[in-house]
Amino acid sequence: MLDPKLTDEPARLAALERYEVLDTPREPSFDRITDLVRGILGVPISAVSLVDADRQWFKSLAGLDDKETSRDVAFCNHTIRQRAPMVITDAREDARFCDNPLVTGDPNIRSYAGIPLETPDGYNIGSLCAIDTVPRQFDPGQIAILQNLAALVVEQLELRRIAERDHLTGALTRRAFLSEMNRAIALFERHDRPASLLLFDIDHFKRINDTHGHPAGDQVIRGIARLCTSLQRPSDSLGRLGGEEFGILLPETAEEDAARAAQRFCDAIAATEIPGTPPLHVTVSFGVAELRGDWPTSESWLAVADMALYEAKRSGRNRIAIARHDATHAT
Image (cartoon, rainbow, N blue to C red; front, side):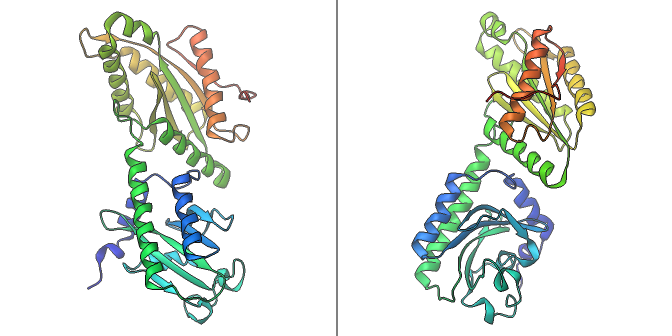
């Protein structure tokens, strides 16, 4: 009987989406695995491949410079349809791949061994693969090594997901939030999709800690995070970037709508009593920055928003400021 989880594409894509890994930068923990595959199996190419709705995206690719391919030519698109390893000794002799452009042209794939990346709940989201440009056999020992390394890839994805949440607020950690910003930048560069960043911190937060103690400060941070989560759209992302500083990423949002959203958050926080002993009222200051080609990295985008946040604080706090279009980040 066919495993239903191998044919439930919406659930498989949802499992992939939960990792929030697509379009994130390269990470050493994954690159080390593909380097190991190349070294141990003696192949020129290895990849951690994640199969999205219409593309194959590489979290790590050793031996080639590509970031992604279309799904319809991906060997890994076949690997995810089964539980067992997929091994091809000569792609020119395989009816599924003999006319594949990755076989007839660069990178001239001849042999392939792929292990499905199976999530703990049983969905294949991609594969760890070894690729050679000459026909070859992969012996059982090599396949066993590849299976162990594939399990390590899934463990890294799980650890990455666990590490993405701030323990106090449940918001994204700084690292995870920057990854979300990088995904927005990739969409902007590939499809010209807009996005805006709201950066804010709590006004006079040190005074709260000094007057009422750090437990009261923690309660304020939790309360603001909870309020922002209740006000944001499902597609928005809230991150705690450090101390009392937060960011809200607004996909598909240009500057004018982002400014209105920031004012709504600002007003709601000022009007809310944070429960505790004693209950407290606080305000926040916002910097707003729409993504632009002049700010091509998460750090430069963040720096421009931070300049606007500084302007909001300098001009009186409990207000928003919009990044100047000619703003440049410090180098």
